[in-house]
Image 1 (spheres, rainbow, N blue to C red):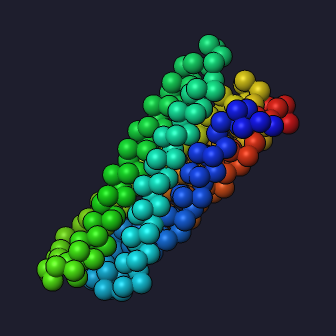
Image 2 (cartoon, rainbow, N blue to C red; image 1 turned 135 degrees about the horizontal axis):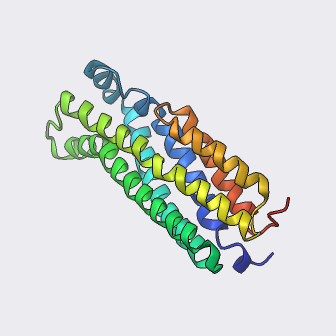
Length: 210
């Protein structure tokens, strides 16, 4: 099938990979959301963890950009007037989620960035209590950002099935993935979305009757 018939392939696969890598690398930090300041002090004193956090935060920025590209590519590929309401809603929720993801990335990157900069300029950097607050704010922002993402997943799955460019099983699993995303206060349930996104890119353009 030609590239023109698979407009979602690159952004959807890119989103899935970036999201999987970023959540995987940020898992320890995200899993510490309700922990004490002492836990964050130990975390941020580990240079290897700081590098993981930095790479994970950058991956989250890439995921945000890929999400914008995905919803815009979906929007351009859906011309059926009967699906315009769902298309517009999916676009809106996708863009809101992307804004939340990039905000979360900024918060989660603050400590690794300022620590690296402080090492160069010989500055003391951010106090431990503030570091914990920034990391917690970033984690909560991420968990909130996946709520509109869950809605966008359901809508994109429904649109693809209704216009006949997505297998039925992708639409059905979209509902399951949305539930996992809504359980995103734990890190593990966030990961299946990455697999679904990659599958979306690989299957968009197939018959919805499958």
